[in-house]
Length: 142
Figure 1: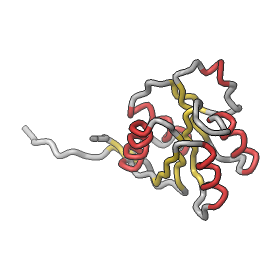
Figure 2: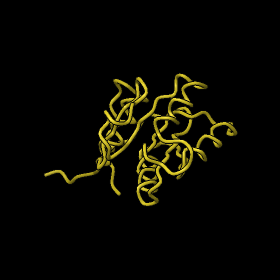
Figure 3: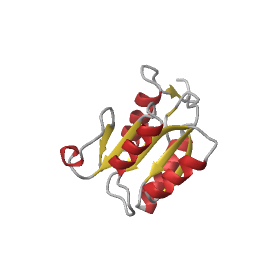
Figure 4: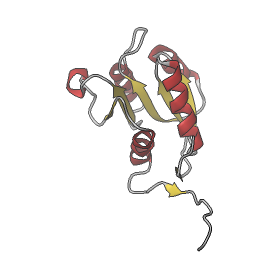
């Protein structure tokens, strides 16, 4: 996977919640590649337990809305905001955002999204107004 830019350093980890294993790993890998520390879970239940017991601050939540377990993506965001109100969030879904009932201030990323859309959503929430740093690729001079 080749990404052309990097994020500025992020204080804390990105919590990814996605029940599809390949998509979950892709999200974790691409965000790690652009400089983010990530942890990934298949259920919101597991992610919430991690957040409540971890010493590491959560910088951002990215959650699929339709998840197995007791808690859906939008519900997880509301629970997290109740305890950590400043935590930004992204909900991803193939469903229309109007059917989900997104919590206020939550960014919606419609599936299927591109890798660039994912990275830009993260950059815009964590570093508004700061464009990701372009990584230079040496090209021969003519």
